[in-house]
Amino acid sequence: MVRSHQQSREYIRDQLKSGTPVFALSRPEGVLLLGVGQKQSKVFEIYDRHAFAALGHPVDIEKIRQAAIEAAHLEGFNRSAKDVTLRRLISFSLSGMLKNAFEQVFAPPLIVESLFAELGDRPAQDNLVRVHYDGDHYYETSGVLLAHRDAQAEREAGEWIRKALGRRIHSRAR
Image (cartoon, rainbow, N blue to C red; front, side):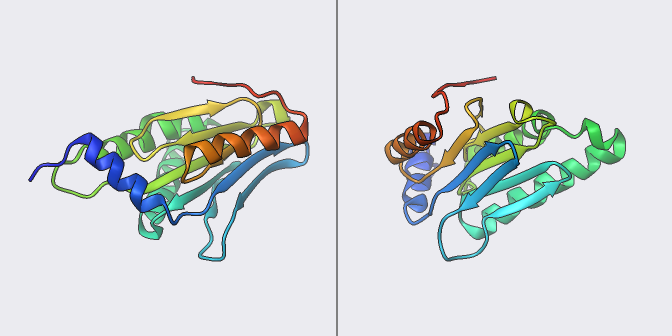
């Protein structure tokens, strides 16, 4: 039996139901990444100014973490440490990997919702990126980013945090 993309989405959403949220917050002191819950750590340093947080299956989170580390180190080796950017890591490595895993017909998809952060020289230069299980991604410009198993709860929590911090509620895709 061949599964459809809709079946994959439903399966992944069902598998994520037990996941606990992760948050990213750009502050003058740096970028805060926080995983809520009592299970294994879900927040990791990737490379120099880059970090990763996720909810999902631990094995799949580890696959994404390892892929991000390998891509960052390869980029840093082939170019320079300053050339390692989230835009390049997400666009040229991770997004394609997730898209391929999602579209595989006879293999299970990766069950992971991810946040990536890149520390800039100033908070306005910090980059926060949400990467979905199917490789779709967007860049958040308000300085607040969440990944939650429930889209409505994610929106509400994001709005509450932005309001509490006095941040504009604005995001744009890049």
